[in-house]
Image (cartoon, rainbow, N blue to C red; front, side, top):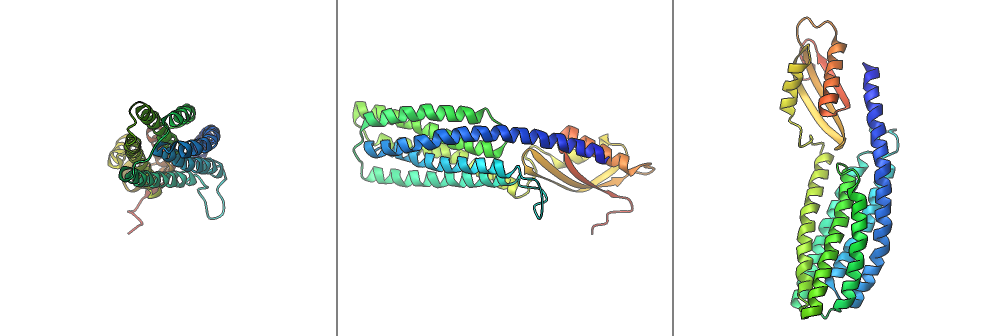
Length: 304
């Protein structure tokens, strides 16, 4: 039984390690692209006087820090378990995703505050300069987003990084539209208006990221898992299982699920280890839960 369990864990850990290596490379590429162009957009925003460009530059600054944090999370998560961290550092990725989500919410607040100031006191904007910088930013953001989006989208750390870049991409599109309207009509209020529209789109994605990462940090069960249905299926499909209780399911990350449960045995069970092995195999094959701890109740539950 122990050998089978370690085979599952070794395969799962190898797969996670390979995925994290690929994700780390993608994050590093996006980090370089975003970090370099951030300075270009800051200069362009100051010269043109565009809030849309400055907002996008501020967002790219946060992106640079967020991507650096994401890269650090992938690096730290590779450290083996030890000392008081018996599960290792995998959860650091989720913490990074949570911080990234909060930083996005902060950026939304800053954009809204600046937009209100622009509505009260409109400013002159150099549309041509704004258009050139925004177009260059769009190209950079498309490349960075493509690199991240082709990675593991079930990984919250990658999702958080991709959402940051997606926000930048939307900001570049909004800046291009605003620049064209300003060039042909001179209507400068379109700049803060589109900035607010982009902020609302970022807000939705940021809240989703914060909510999902907080759910993992709070040891929540996966959204797709019906625990009651899982218990019924185990009783129906694994011989020797008479009942299940004290079920706890959580994840170090959404990909690395953990489970503990008590199993009540039926009458005339020849081997407890065979039943436990059957439950573990069922959990692995049907739910992808590779790390499970099963307590067998023989003369009633030991917990009060």
